[in-house]
Amino acid sequence: MNLLSAKFKLVLGEFTLKVEIEIPIHGFTVLFGPSGSGKTSFLRCISGLERAPEGFLQIESETWQDEKKGIFIPAHERKIGYVFQEMRLFPHLNVEENLRYGLKRHTPQNGDALFSQIVDIMGLGSFLSRGSRSLSGGEKQRVALARALLTRPRLLLMDEPLAALDTKRKQEILPYFQRMQYELNIPIFYVTHSLNEVLQLIDTMLLMDQGKIVAAGSVEDVLSRHDLGRHLGHTLVGTVLDTTVVRQDKEFQLTVLKFNAHTLYVPRRDVSPGDRLRIHIRAEDVTLAVAPIEEQTSVLNVLPAQVIETRPSVEDECKVDVKLDIGCHLLASITKKSLFHLNLQSGQNIYAHIKAIRMAHEFD
Amino acid sequence: MDIPSLDYQPIILTLQLAAVTVLVLLVIGIPISWWLAHTRTRFRPVFEAIVALPLVLPPTVLGFYLLIILGPHGWIGKPVEEIFGSPLSFTFTGLVIASTFYSLPFVVQPLYNAFEAIGKDPLEAAWTLGASKWDAFWTVASPMALRGYITAIVLGFAHTLGEFGVVLMVGGSIPGRTKVLSIEIYDRVETLDYSQAHLLSAGLLSFTFLILLIVYYINRKLPIHVS
Image (cartoon, rainbow over all chains, first blue to last red; front, side, top):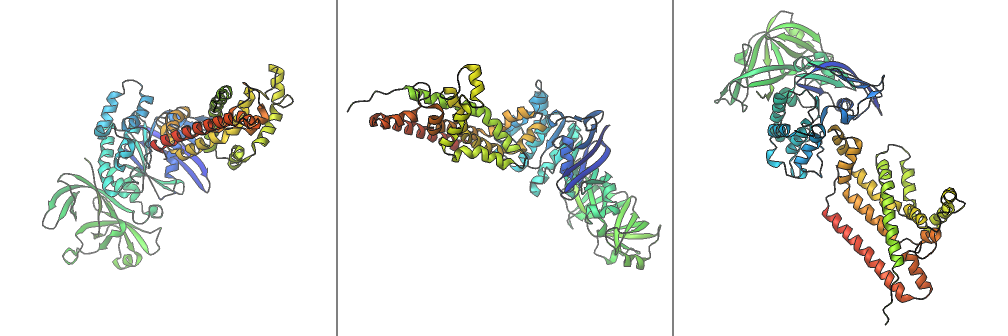
């Protein structure tokens, strides 16, 4: 397994990037965090576009930067692909020339097999001879991604690749990202603000704030860390669950999901039975009750749960975070007053009412 | 009316001077413009002002200083004379050096503007695709700056064609060596040979207008590349 070991300290005006991390890289790793938290600077340091005066970067056994030994491999000699938010296609070249720009510099001969493969994966066959200006935003981003992939990168860096696109185009391009990952298996560092993209793509999360990495781990783990509310924003603290689509309920226009032994109802989505669907339940969308009042509530999803522990909220003095067991962990955020009234104890059996579920359609 | 016989020598000399000057200016102007467009030094306005100086300076002032520097006692002219046996003033080489200074802003400004408009973004993309800085300059920045190159070449050429004051100071008016078109016209007027002056002036006017016209047409056809 590839291991990335990085240590950078970089001062840019008022902002200081200071990161130190060693993680295995495989699949999608997201760099998540508010704007100005240093995600892009971190990517630029990895790519060699930015040179941190104090820096160390090693991928597997290859050292790309070690300022103590005066080692700095310039960007064009690193085996990385970089997909920029603004795509940066070369306007004086057509689509095929754009694609071949990196290919011929890395694979001067016999690059045609790879070329056909990537063009096929990204669905670019029909507009190779078009000028890069005539493409839509989504098409440009596919060309930019294919262009980077054709350099056979060891690591692909994607800096908010969908931020410039509208929701519909984002949905169109996400399957290409998943297909690319599935067929080529290149490790990817992916910068985004979007929970939707995280739910659809991401395995590992690096949470950044104010130039530092504040948490690293699986998406499920990081998003359920109630102590990270300050960095994540309270709307993101919650539980990520992998569910399976059971059936469509035509009468009430709902989609029925299953996870462990539980059944969940969500507004109808365009999915088929058997599809996997990753959902996100915000801690503040979970309310607790000591009795199963299913008959007297408008809340559709009520799950039996057991209290594991309660902790005062770091972010909000009137709130308590409650960790529940529903076959896996479920995080709830309630007021101290509610806690007092319910008198919750560890091990107590209660009912979790889930007011809202956010979801993303996962490619399978 | 007599059809005046034309002396071609000044015309050929002028075209040679303009062509050589543009070549020299490209060689030194491209790196200067590139550096100006990408430097982060806070003294950039100082360098911009220096490059723009010949635009507003009276040509006689520029010519005067060049004459001193290039002359037999100047800090360039003197060593040159010691090595080659003659100073630079009143020679074709001296004229080329003078014209290079004189037309510098006309070559540097369009290139600088073009490079600055392109910015660093496409270059970074090229670097991450495996192109070295040199490679990316020729395969990305230069093709994108094509309009800037054409404008620079034409303006540099046209401006050198019409040079007068600097040439007069540095080169004098030696037939076949330093007597360029504008000096020839001046001499003709001085000797009241208006028919020759008319012919040469009209020729220069039409020629200059024509090349500018061609450039503006080409530029209309070429896309502007900005990132």
